[in-house]
Image 1 (tube, helix red, strand yellow):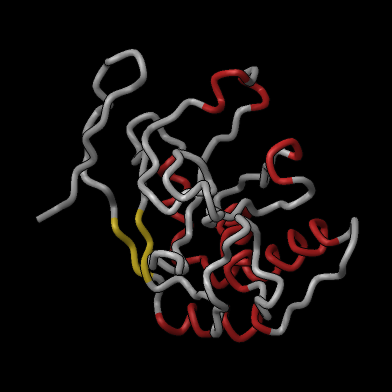
Image 2 (cartoon, one colour):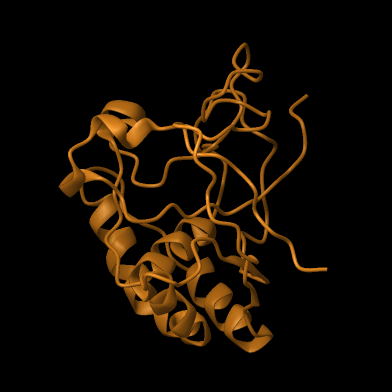
Length: 188
């Protein structure tokens, strides 16, 4: 059975329902990406985001099998959602954070590189909001004690459709949202 997305826009109009394309990154591409990305350690300080983006661009060739689908997403009748499996994740993940931030003891930057390389492969530039997470380029959806039942990036519950970007002028709105699941366990 093909999954179909059903939802409503905030004004009550139905979102067109289409099957969600499901892609699988070939194993050899996954392994090549993982090997290279596992070795990367960005500098601390103000150059971190530039270094993350630059290195991710060097890895985006490993995502070439997915590129035609990214191109289709920009077409009027193209898919609005895309599910990709077999993406590399960090070989070792620390315990779930409890402060809503990237764990300080997370040793590698593989997941961040995956998201940034997807941005590059899709010909998009990464966007983050300094007011929300400081100078962090990749915004973690990570639980924070006391906030786990809120409808925010600090939650461990379901996130409903929301309209954060409605306050932004069109030229500042992001074109896409990329989510990468590392751990689906409850904290504690």
